[in-house]
Length: 115
Image (cartoon, rainbow, N blue to C red; front, side, top):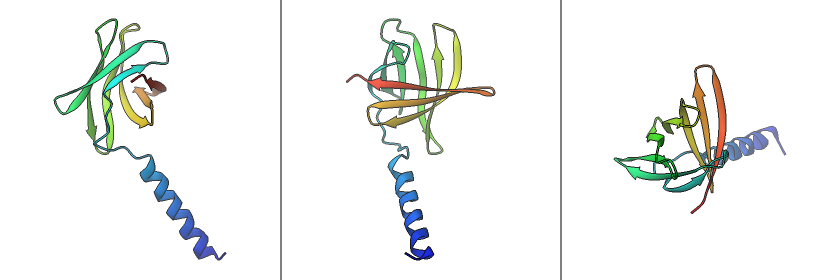
């Protein structure tokens, strides 16, 4: 296989991979999610975006999740530890990957869809 053909194949699969995992404005986060700390969050649509409340505490965990600049972003809060951070939300099938950032620190969380 020539260098030209192999580089074309590389770019083809690279762009296919990008589009397969890209975020879309039509993503739907509605439903109940099990957090990696064992809690359950219920996310529902509100005002063109989403909010998330703790099922047992009824406290706001995800505030105003909106699609901006090609990403789903929101403020995310851990009410048990009283920590608030900026979050990027990425749907991966039945998993929700959340990259929480505060100052110079970041943490990746995974929630599993329950319904």
